[in-house]
Amino acid sequence: MTMITLSFDNGPDPDVTPQVLDTLRRHDVKATFFVVGDKLRDRRALSERAHAEGHWIGNHTYNHLVPLGLTAERGVAAAEIARTEERIVGLAHERRFFRPFGGGGQLDRRLLNREAFDHLRQGGYTCVLWNVVPEDWAYPSSWVERALKLCFAEEHALLVLHDLPTGAMDNLGRFLLAARDRGAVFTQDFPQSCVLMERGRPALPVETYLTEAA
Ligand SMILES: [Zn+2]
Image (tube, rainbow, N blue to C red):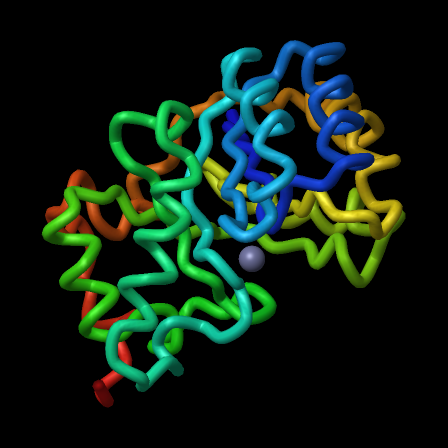
């Protein structure tokens, strides 16, 4: 049996996030939204709705411009995390979920620098990676087939989608139906193999995702 956990990164978006929430409600699936702090300036109500409907809210940096592992300037990585955490006060999950920005889904040393790692450790964050990226931003319709193939190759898939206005989320319902048709079970919690740090403690070999510089 394949289990699938859904996550939506880079939002919230005034049009697409409500659409995603409606679809999730219709299909009775709970997910996690990894939000960009800067977008919450005037869109916090969208994350409040997600939270109220049982979805989890995580931190996905403030500006989402440069992977933290490529950020050399002192103070930037810590601020990218801390400023977003301020914006999601009252909404953040108690395990303090943070997902690094992978620049197209890359799982490598660009994810974190030492400063980011120290900040996450000291702040007791749970750092959440992923194992399925169907590139919904590039394939607004056919990401569904890509995602099905990739998810069913995993025992427990942690799928990255984006609540962004690409048109891809018009096909979310189709994905959910097809996955259930094939026997997938949706669960909100993350696979162990995708949790890099749990409440500040490394749970996987962190060096793999830590840049040497900085
Ligand atoms: Zn992202």
